[in-house]
Image 1: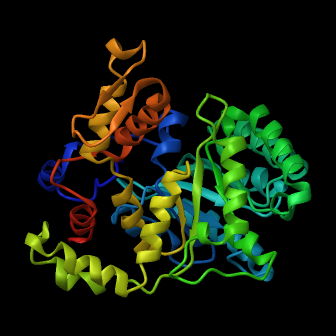
Image 2 (image 1 turned 60 degrees about the horizontal axis):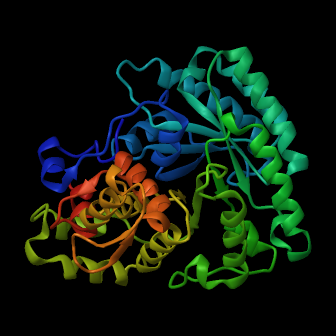
Length: 388
């Protein structure tokens, strides 16, 4: 699989200075954590889940979470588990099927080992589990159950803890909660692929819900938690983890709303502003701003609850030619001693030592999302992704 692998090779060649790399579910954790992109959530109750998974893979989805927790009613759990096992068996029997990275969001630790056993041979399609309301107290049991499932199945399984508990939100308990989470995920570091932020639960604790024209960073009580999580758990000194962006709740935008505008040309031929205005009018402007703020605040990837969000997340994750040029300049071997120089685009200062960690992260993102050509921007990438 690869990002933008669903579009024609000749179109990718016109879009990318350096194309996204290919990878598999067995690639290195470092690469997979960066490659998660827009992780699409789906209730595990869907009767045609196997078909849905392959349909979304064909549209460019790289990672999916099949949810047994908040997205389904308490009374549906048993049926959802049975459906999940059936759908995995269905997928495993389809010759040539290439699903995305698949994770299951469970409710309780005991579900992990139980589901791993019930999946049988089809567990080869599973990349891991999403662990809700993760704290030090709850997390150890989840991660121990994951270790048991991994040992008995012989399959490498990752954990993606969701940071969404009241202890993390409330100021008086936040520092202790973060320290406990850090101890736990560090102990099981080889199994923790990424940390996910549960901003909906944060808002719920105060009866809040951000409107579509505002981002999570406009809700100060939420923004303060994101900042503290990145401060403690997202450091670039080798101790940090990939932290993914919060969910965007609004999905009035549908792909079909844009396709009449996009079919005329994969590169718009001067109509970029027309599409930009359409994006704003259909409430996606808030999503675009939040994606940019996610990256500016140290987050990579995003939780998504609607397919229309996937391509914007991926298009904005592509490294621009200017970013790539700056990163390569900073990391040249001859600059190991430090120093400062004018960028190749002659519009900024590149200071080698302070900007090194940024440059390393930028090249990591470039590896999995690619580098756009000089004249290619977000609109062209989105347009190509939507074209059939």
